[in-house]
Length: 452
Image 1 (tube, rainbow, N blue to C red):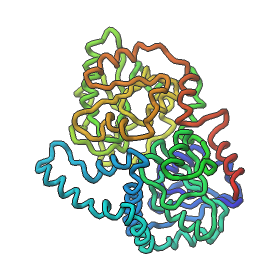
Image 2: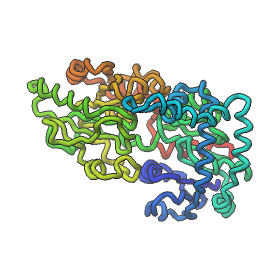
Image 3: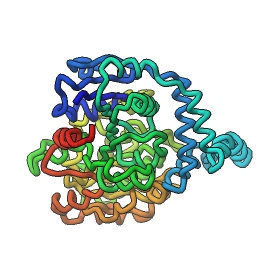
Image 4: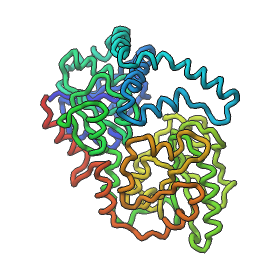
């Protein structure tokens, strides 16, 4: 089988190439192609069958984004996050904005085009107009013609311009496609596939359900395969993992979505000071999300302002640079296992890091309260994002549902008895598939059984 693997982001170089996710399907008939927005990558360019970079026109980016939003609004009843996403990006204004009512009206007026073009009557017309305006990506088509693959494999977020180009060209050339969904929320919080891939590799049973119910794919097109960036957690020894720190610590993981983390950190600092006999020499290691969205409140963490909290040293340079809200900084995946495994427990708003911590056998206190500032704070993330549905059943996961409860919940979590790691992982299997094999083996088995 002739295979073409297309890489569209530096994140996927890290998540798939650096984890050797494709090593068991790499042979003389396996080729690589990449989006030219990726900086030159040694690990990519050293592949025997790397055939180059391709470009995506800026105008195509704009039109595809409009297409994605049109599908999101047209099928907003399929996922509660679609309306919330629309509201958060197009309608919502910060709570302290001057002339709020006037700006809200203007924001609504800017959205009329999407609202009118995405209803039951006009949606298909909108799609037809956009499709006619979008030429086939000739650069991509030329590269595909040069090897004529039987299967195109594409790691993606289900919200990707190059993905649409791949699906259009593959449809024209009658080439099968396998999309590997990269993250937990990708199938439930972005949009609905305009053109559907032939096959999907997804995180687990929850993602498979989202693919069927939201994207209208059939179950036989979807395989639970997990994710390669979590493979290292399942391979961790139970004991003897060296810590990065010479002191015991609690890890605070920040979120991508807007949340007042500094106020929460100040309260945690106060709790430790008040309960110094309980926590002794413990420190809190604060790990802000490396690509976090802008906040509507003070968001600069300074260690000098805290007695018991330090910044995770891996992020220090990126955090204090001007690039800390972009994906220019790619944290090494090899750093995470020891960081999570050696924490007494992990605290933070709802993020994927909470799942990663539990895989490592580390208990978690999830902050699920309204911070009083951000529309995207965890109370709404929990309410509107379908991938958080059912997380109450995960062993080792505790919740703080009110800021006033943080002290009690923090101390309570610290005193909870350890839960067997096997129980934690078993309760996670609905969300993240795993078995005795590694990801690269599961991918090899999936590719071998496809009807190509």
